[in-house]
Length: 462
Image (cartoon, rainbow, N blue to C red; front, side, top):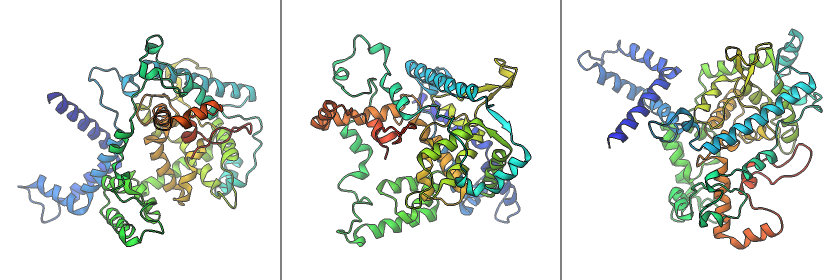
């Protein structure tokens, strides 16, 4: 009991410290000072009166949403004596595998830099800056020569790393239950079985209405759809992030999806957010990074303009180029098993005081990276709002799909979950796929882009 109270106090202290550096804290402070001029604020009950003012004026709800947002990315509970690296990843062999993978990525990037004699970063000439600024909204029409550039890695390379993951403690004396797992992922992680999934996703049960099923043409809309939409509108009016997340567990109405996702992610597009996006844009205009060419190459290979399929190529460039300059993204490495790569000022190799993160956000784009952004382009048509949504989704969810960790939402656990469920509940299909050489690595089906840079094929991603 005492340990739980201690853990809770620590969590509260860390969240308070995080919020103290936010724009919301400054706004709350200004509002508190301004409220002192109001006649209903009495000196005798100052604390309670200001609390009531925050509640009536809606600032209490904004604070609750901010706390909820911080809790959503808070590291899993760990032993108080655990070293800092355990917060990133508790299993040593996973940390070593991630470290080796990062070295391979950096080697690939540095090799390309050396071969092409291109610097990692340079300041653009004034003429080039003006040209880029003029075509900022039409970058999809540009056709730079990218033939010499290659992605630092493809999904197939990452899949091979996952397949070769092994826990050294299980090499010689693994348990019978784990030895009978015949999928590609051979690490002993705890994943949910069907009863546990039914409990976790209780809203998908037959006794609960679900949008996409109970709003089909055979079911009258007044039985479920109309009421569900009405509740969704009420949730949006209340501006409650936690309520919105609970609401969409029964499906999100198409007309409300963009607003609901923004509310859950606590994105409100304040003037300062738009200004921050414009600052990132200015940074893109002024400086050229090697990773910019990797982004151009990836978009051209995976999501270039098509009048019948995808017309948002310009958005992809705008979002991803700004994302590469956003140093606020570095914060997610506190709970990510990966570490941001470093580069050194020319002539100062190895001297830590001259080390800088490269790219500035710490994320090296790979083949298929632009596919994280592409679906969001159908919902958000204002670049700064689209950018905020993508950045928040990345630091909460997407990063786990390309880093090696034992986290339940990580790519390794998701792969193992799919294979385990398929082998347990559809064994005939599982063995048939194995017999024809199509290993049912659920990792491929769910999480990897569909095409290779050389034109080959890899199992699709939904």
